[in-house]
Image (cartoon, rainbow, N blue to C red; front, side, top):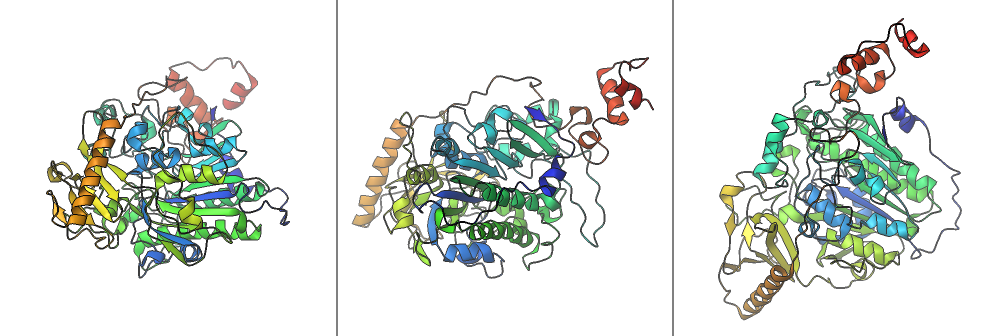
Length: 592
């Protein structure tokens, strides 16, 4: 049930959802259905945070958790861009097996197929209470949103924060900036040129029959069977504070229950053209760092991490809670200083610089990551074993005592041995699907990680001049030792069999695993759910008020529902005459 609520934003910020804040010590033992918090950054590069060595970034809360837990130096994303990465994270399955594209647009018809089991649905069956706060990006139609995928509550933007305009409440000393009521549609063509969209997502359709919901970012809340658009366009100035309040109050009211809190941050993905430096931060964080707008945005996200951790300490839940931290993919390098840093993962052998987000060079798919669990994970520990976002689903299922669905292939592996002890990786061969190898079935294998080796069967830039710089290795892949050479600067071999016997043996193993994967892999196919009430071409996006082209700011739409202006616009849009004399008391009052 979709509805727009007049005071929803005020209520969300101003009213407490608190129950009695008991801080008794009658919690479960640490390994008895532990709580899970998954902190999933957006477009954060390996070189962006303090615990991986950035010299000026301000991430004290993230760094404290990392150093008091286990830093995971070799965490690979399930996909080099947004939607695919999240599909892999939620299902434990390769995004190509699920059938989703790299990116869903904000007004498309498809979403994560309903026959896929999410980690939230797994945990819910085991008695967990689940919430998500932040960027979803697995379909914005109501049947695809978190409340229908195992989450009890949700607050956030259903897709990337460059897929629509927003406004900012001015901070002290700033001038008022008007909402762009004539905002452009999102930049579909750039994503299409890089092959990230599903073939059915036609950018020409946006031009011929645009859905106005694609103009302005919505802030969506789901709870108790209701889906509410709180703001459209939303307010970037107060967004992070809303996320923080939602997350900490969820923890407090569920302190006696096993819970799963998924925090897919909207930070630090760039925004659309209407924000300075294509980044945003609340008033407390603007100008607070030496890294500019990107640094300010990251510092604000770090503050939210600190608030979540502080709430766990306040309620004495640290020893019952596993915190995982990762990024969906690497930094969006074409965005310059607003797009982040891949650190030492430069892909230096490439003859182009765009080796971050969108590519399967290390900078595009290797994430700054850690696991924190007080009393269970050894502080100041570190592992270079290969893990992946694909592993979250089987790992949390294992720790919660739940069997994986038996009717499907799960590509992820249980990494509990790595987190809790110093066990080895269970990925003998981690297949890295990408966008430079597009066959009849779908996106093919771009690279394979095997022990210390990384084999590229196909390479390309993330976004810039993607198609013209695609290089395929037909006979043997481009081979690196990424333990010795994480910058991928000096290949062992460049499309031929290596000279060294050990490298030759590794190449043969990789070729056999590659051939087996190609022969046995089944690509998923998207079949959008049938249209619901008021849905159809040009009407799949989330919209607060279609009478106002989905613009409910100021004296428009949402905050004007029930007023004479909204009433008059309603009759104008339908081409109706207003009843005369008035048929109801309400109609009579609106004539005054």
